Structure formats: structure tokens, C-alpha cells
Image (cartoon, rainbow, N blue to C red; front, side, top):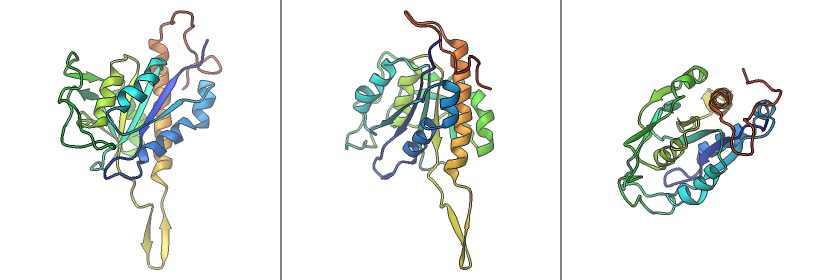
Length: 225
């Protein structure tokens, strides 16, 4: 039994977001000792350049490795909580340039593709993400988050896109003292690692042995709980 392949993606900076917290969070998930212990190997990490060209030069090669599940993270600057994106649409906006200054070439991402693609596991992930206040969403935007998600959903493996809000101020002043609160990244990391385990369980159930390979099995021979 081979170890499962989990691809975790985040994004680099883009206009208006010089430091993208989705990349920080993706790195935390990929480095999770719990995931490594359950999987028997570390998840694969991909920090996408926030450009339309990265879909072919960076995302396509990663998908060619046939991950069993994909966990995608991006930032939504107007969001107030984590949004669990249930679908991606076959549309792009030409109003917002990417990190290279370019806009989408056309309004349709795939001329032969369906109007939308849905995640079959989005509803199931509301449970582990409920404790961090995550909500369901049907609008992944018209930028690179939506475009990359639309491409990944065409693979047919369990996949989800999580939009995170900008990181809040980690502290507040009370007189001359600074009161520390739990770092949002810590809480988000814990909840999203739980979501990754749900993805892996679903992937195992859906697994079909590839030519020359056996179906994957998490380390220890049992599905994670």
C-alpha cells in the first residue's frame, strides 16, 4: 500500500496583499506532525505565484503527479471568517491584474468546460471547521482562487478551497498592558488539519488502484479518525 498524496496549495503576494497569509497557513498545514504521522509522509506543498501563467507552469505539473486529495487556501480581503467554497465557475474578471500586471485573456476559463464545478466534500468539511466560525460559500470570486479551483475540480479527486480573511491584530491595548489572544493561525491550523484528514478518508473511499500501483493506505493500515 502506497502512502496517500495530499497536495496543499497557497498563494504568494499580489497587488494589495504584499504578504499573503494563505502561504503561511499552507506551509503550516504541510508541516503538520499529525498529518505526517497519519499519512506516513508529508503532504506536498505548492505556493502558487499569483499569476494566470502559474496555472499552466506550476499547478498543472503538480496535478500531473495525481494527488489523491487537494486542499487549497487563498485570501479574501473582505471576508470576516473562513469561507468553505462549494463550487468554482467558468468565469474570470478582466478588471483585476495578477502579480505580473496581466489580466485574464478571456471571460471564460475553459471554452469547452461546464458552467460550474462543485466540490463533493464541501458540506462534510463544515463540521471540523465549525469551531473556527467557518461558513459555507458559493462564490469563489472571479480571480485566481476561482480559476485554480475550477481547474483542480476537473481532476475528480476530493478537493476543497478555503478562503481565509486577513489576519486580525493579534493584540489589543488595555491601559499600559498588551493583552494577548490566541493566534488565529494556530486555531485555523488545527481545524484545517482536521479537514485534511476528512479529505484523506474520502480519497481512500474513492481510491482506485492505478496501473502498477496499489491503492493508498494511511500509515498504520487504518483510516484516520
